[in-house]
Length: 197
Picture 1 (cartoon, rainbow, N blue to C red):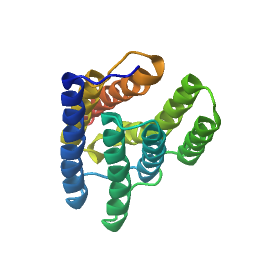
Picture 2: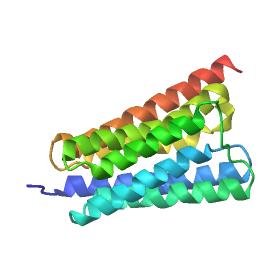
Picture 3: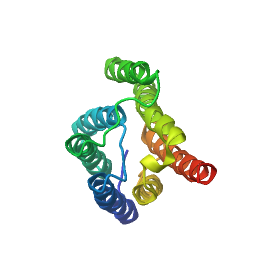
């Protein structure tokens, strides 16, 4: 049975704060036209986060619901604002729309699966497919993102792992994946900036 300790709650709140604070430098980067978000990535991530919020909320309140809910709102705000500021990127390679479709299929399989472990695998597949679009974009143009928002994302990912109240595949798989993805994205961003300096 899932039991929350004061420590779990603390890291849950901390994760939410990192996610919330990280929104602002990203919005500022869009406003200053220093960030060019891949629109399809953020639409996909927004769909994943929205479905995740509904699924988690149906099981009862956890700090994960708060974190994922904030993420969902942020994703769609980035999409709308990047379109308004005319800095959103819809395509970074010839494969972008096919990758997006693969992510959408992952979403459908996630929702159709009655096996919780398999559902998490499909959710990760969907999220990674959407995230691959941003990785490709950063590889081609590392200056299309700024560093600070991703630092907050890494901090949020690390603290979310500490907010987990019990260990099971369904509980830890997605947070572990997110933490690994954010670290990899950050590493690619730094390495490609050095190469293309």
